[in-house]
Length: 456
Image 1 (cartoon, rainbow, N blue to C red):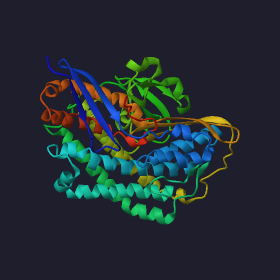
Image 2 (cartoon, rainbow, N blue to C red):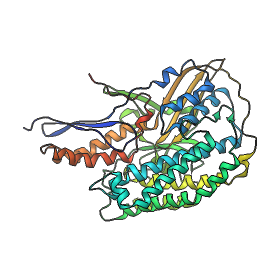
Image 3 (cartoon, one colour):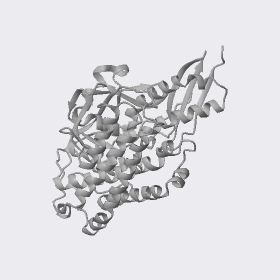
C-alpha cells in the first residue's frame, strides 16, 4: 500500500491575494482537497457597527483595493435602501460609469496579465513571456487599465477608494474637461478590448485549446439582470438551474429568503448555498460566466457578438466549463467599454441634478452590485439616528469558493496517477493543471471579510 501523501501547492501565483491548495492521498485514493485562503481576517462586519451610515461607503471600500468601487457602490445603495432614498437618474448614470471603470481595469488586468500566460505561453506561463511574445498587447493592456482607472478618478475623485457616491446621489457631476479627455481615449480602449476578446476566442478554437480541459461542472448560476439584459449595477437577482431554466427571480432585499450560509471547520469563509436545496445540492456560481448564463442578451452590440460566439462554441446555454469564464470575461470587457463610451458622450452628466437630500432613519437596507468577480451584497441595519447597528456582507469570491473546491477535487481525481508519482515533478505537473482552474474564476482574496486559514 502506498504511503499517505500531503501535497501543498503554494504559493499560488497570478491571483489577487494569497491562497494555496492542499491535497491528501491515502491508500492510493484522493482523500481530501481544500482551497485555502491565506489572508488576515479584516472583520469589517463587526467594526462597522456603531459608525454613522453615511461613512460606510468610505470605510467599507477599504475591504479591497481591487474591488473598491463595487464595495463603495454596494455600500451606498444599502444605506439608501435603509433610509428610503432613491437617487436621481443622473447619479445612477455616474455610478454606472464608475462601475464600468472598475470592470475595465480589473478585467484588463486578469485577461492580459493573470490568465493569458496559461494559454499564450503555457510552457513558461508568466507575464514576461507574454510581453516578449506580444509586446503590443502587453503595452495596450496597461493603457486599457489606465483608461479604466481614469474613469474611476474622473467620476469618483480617486483611482482607488473613490469618495463621491453619497447617500442621495453623487458629490458632483462629471467635469467637462475630464469628459473630453476620456472621449479621446475611448476609441483606443474599445479597440484593445476587442483585440483581447478576439485573441481569447482564437486560442479557444485551436486544436490544443483548453476548452473542455477542465471537467464540466454543472451548477446553478446567479446574478443580476435587467429584464433579461446583462446588468452590473441594478436589476433583479436570478438563479438558473444547471439546465438553464429559471429557478428564482427576486429583489435584492429578499436575498435572505433564498440564500443561506454554511461554515466549514477548516476556514472562516462563509459558504452560501440555495436555501431550499440545502448545502449539498444548492451550490451555485457567480461572476462573468454566471452573469452571461443568467442574462438573455448583452447590453451593447459588439458584446452581443462575442456572447453569441461563446454559446455557439459550446452548443448553447448554460455553459459549465470554467475555461469559459475567460471568454465571458472578454465579452464583458467589450460590453463595459462600449457602455462607458455611450455615457461619456451623454451631455446630461454635466448637469446639476445629481443629488437629493437623504435623512437618517431607522431601517434595514440591502445594496447589491455585480463586482467584477460576482454578485456583492452589503446589508445594513441602522437606528433612528442613522447609526449602523448590524452589518452582513456576502462577497463574490466567497460564493465561488465551494465550486472552486469542487472543481479542484474533480480535476485532482482525474490527475490521481500523477499524484501517486514521486515528488517533486509530479507535484509540479499537478500544479500546472490546477492553478489555471482557480485563476479562471479570478478570485479576489483581497476582498476577505471572513477569510482566514485556521491552524490547529
